[in-house]
Image 1 (cartoon, helix red, strand yellow):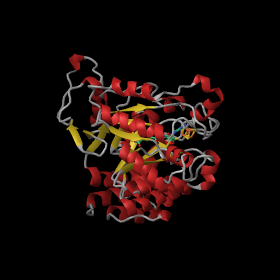
Image 2 (tube, protein in one colour; image 1 turned 180 degrees about the vertical axis):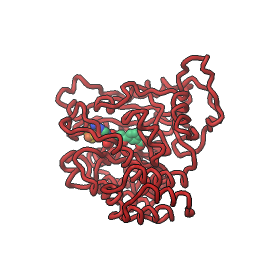
Image 3 (cartoon, protein in one colour; image 1 turned 90 degrees about the horizontal axis):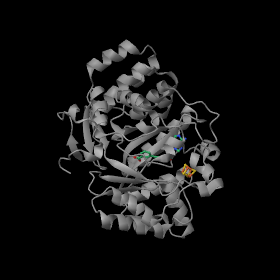
Image 4 (cartoon, protein in one colour; image 1 turned 135 degrees about the horizontal axis):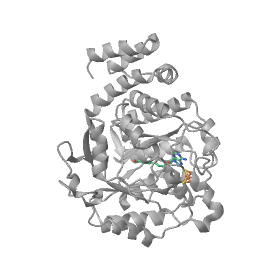
Length: 399
Ligand code: V47
Ligand code: SF4
C-alpha cells in the first residue's frame, strides 16, 4: 500500500491522541500493528479515526467492491449435546422432541428443492448429535456432490469434526482427508467463539478448545483448502481477549494463507443462558469491524453477517472495513432468529441486496465461495415495475 497524503491530513483532522496518530501512520504506510497497538485502538480510538484507517485498508484490498454470494443454509438439527451458554440450541436437548433431527433423505429433499435455482453454495451448520457421525456426513457430502456437482459444500466446524473423529477414533488428518474426498469444499468460520480459555471455559466449556479449532483449520489448509474464521464478541470478553483471538488467527494465516474471510459475530441475547447481558451498541459493532480490518492485515476479506446485525449496521459497516455481506439466504436459518437476530425473516432478494450496497455507494459484486466474480451489478438496473422478484428468480449471467 502506498502512503496517501489525503488520508494523512484527514487523520490529522480527526485524531488528537498521539498514540493513535502513531498507529494511524503505521496503518497508512501498510505496516502491521502490534497486539499492544490493537489494544490501544480498542481502548482509545474514536470512530472517525477508525473509519478512515479501516476504509483505507479495505479500499487498498478490495477497491469499491462489496461482495455477496447466493447461498442457502441447511441445519440438520437444532438439538445439541453441548451447552454453550450463548446458544439457544443448547437448551433444546432438554426438550428434544420439540426440535428437529433431519435424516439424510430430509436433507437431500432440501438440497433438491434448490434444483434449477442459481445458488452456488450450501452452508451446512447446526447442533451436534451422535447419529451425525463420520459415516453420515461422508455419505451426505457424496450424495450432494453426485446430485449437483457444481454446488459448493461449505459445511460443519471443528466443533463437529473434533466430536465425530474422536467418536470414530480417527485422527484429524485422516478425518479431514476423508471429508475432502467425500466432497467437502470449504469450512465455514463457526465454533471459534473466543479462543482464550478464561472466556471459552465459561461460555463454551465442553466443546473443542481454541487450539483444537485452529489445528483442524490448519490441517484443512494444508490439504490445499480454504476456510473462514469468526469471533463471537460483545459478551463477557475484554478487548484483550479479542486481540488474543485475532492474534492466533493472524499467526495461522501467516503459516497457511488458507483463511478467506473474517466474520465478527455480535452476541445476541435472546433465548439463551446469557440473556442477562446487554448487547453492545452499533458504535461498538462498527469499532470492532474497523479494528478487525486494521489488525488482520493478512485476511483478504471482512464480512458482516447482516441477519444478525441488521441491514442499517451492515450498510454502515461498508465504511468501516467490511467488503462482504452475507447473504442471500432463505428462512431456514434458525440459530440466529432464535438468539434475537435483527431480521426475523432473513431472506433478502438479490435486488434488495444490490440496492443496499448501492445506497452505501459501493459496487455490488456477486461472487462464488472462492471469490471468483459471478456478476458485477454496477450497471444493472432493476425494473421496479416488475414488482418484487425473489433472488432465486433473477436471470443469472456467467453462472
Ligand atoms: O459459532 C450462536 C454463533 C456461529 C449466537 O463462514 C451466535 O461464512 C450471536 O459461524 N449470538 C455459527 N452469535 C455461524 C457462523 C457463520 C455465520 C455466517 C457465515 C459464516 C461463514 C459462518 O453462530 C457459532 C456462534 O458463534 N452464535 N449463538 C448468539 N446468541
Ligand atoms: Fe451446540 Fe454450536 Fe450451539 Fe454450542 S454453539 S450449543 S456447539 S450448536
